[in-house]
Image 1 (cartoon, rainbow, N blue to C red):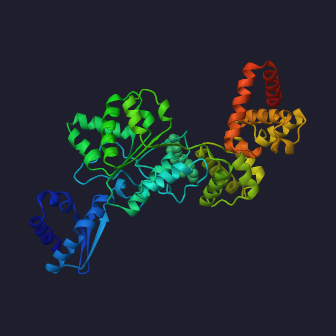
Image 2: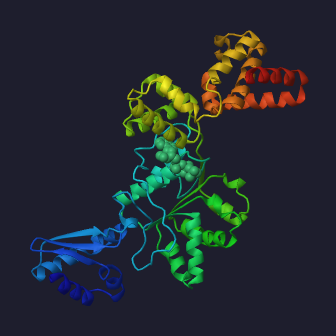
Image 3: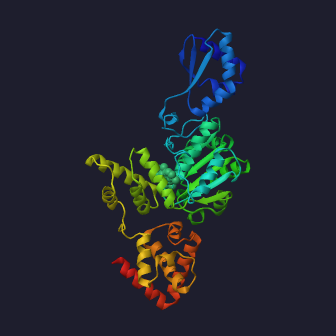
Length: 439
Ligand SMILES: Nc1ncnc2c1ncn2[C@@H]1O[C@H](COP(=O)(O)OP(=O)(O)OP(=O)(O)O)[C@@H](O)[C@H]1O
């Protein structure tokens, strides 16, 4: 085979380490008059060979009368089939795969499929900038949110984008648990040098999820702290995610906490109404589910927080609609949702606004007006407080009901909470309203 000859000639032409790292692992899958197909262990490997050695390989092939076309293919191990969506952590050739499970990539977690709104725009923009190699938001990003609000989606969107636009980037994407397990393995097998060189010298971008799971894991914190220290100081890109705000993660070394938060720290809020509606439309279309505006509105008003619940509701709606052979109308959707939502569907922000208006004999126009008369501001503030207490609507959503922004709602909640503790009359009135609402 001509490839064997070319390979031998490259062994003579290249430094031993380069040949061992980049040429030796290539295997020949096909060789005929037209094409030589070489297989490399992963995408990063192939991109590197393509950039640095392809012309050399082609030149040698010509010399030895081989085919003019060379194809580089990623081996079809599940963890390296990144195009097919089964993705995995990228690693350097010659560095053995860790024995622990590698975090796989979801093919749909891309920027295009991430719906943007006030709640997540900062996190999204920062991720986009990091993926594009811009330093607008610095090099180190810490994202936190409660569950199901898109931390993994955004982190993986960065990985997808970097792999598409700069595939030779040495990138490691894993969870904190995987980092920890790999480190323990390194210690046990006496291979800590390899471990450190993988994450320190041979890393352009590090993405570690679920940092909150490092509570009490002092050795892992110490190791990751050293890695971050080097990466941040040398301008490498870092993304960390956590289900807990950095200041609230217990059992974390203060130096480590401060290093992790030395760049931009951003919190993804629960999506507001408009974002929820666009997520519902987008996910419905993906599920080939046609939803009318009334149904989308109903779902957006009742499904807040964790987007996984929205996804599960849409799957349920589709299943029920298929089963009955009818399009998903409001009655069907309400039935499916009754199994998912834990609070009575009728206790919405609007219901509470109507109720409070009726109790205080104030119209909706007055409640939503700019008026600052005490006879109107007090019911408005109480209504905002009750909506927050009973509906789980975001501050921005509550604000919309009263023509205000989220900071006014936050202020109203603080005022009512404070006055309830100081003034018996306020406490009694609010308690009475709560009793009526619960009935
Ligand atoms: N803004 C968004 N647009 C579209 N889909 C979204 C958005 N936010 C979240 N999702 C979807 O919600 C689901 C959960 O998101 P993801 O796994 O990223 O959450 P997470 O914050 O990492 O949660 P956890 O803390 O539980 O790991 C995913 O299927 C994701 O696609």
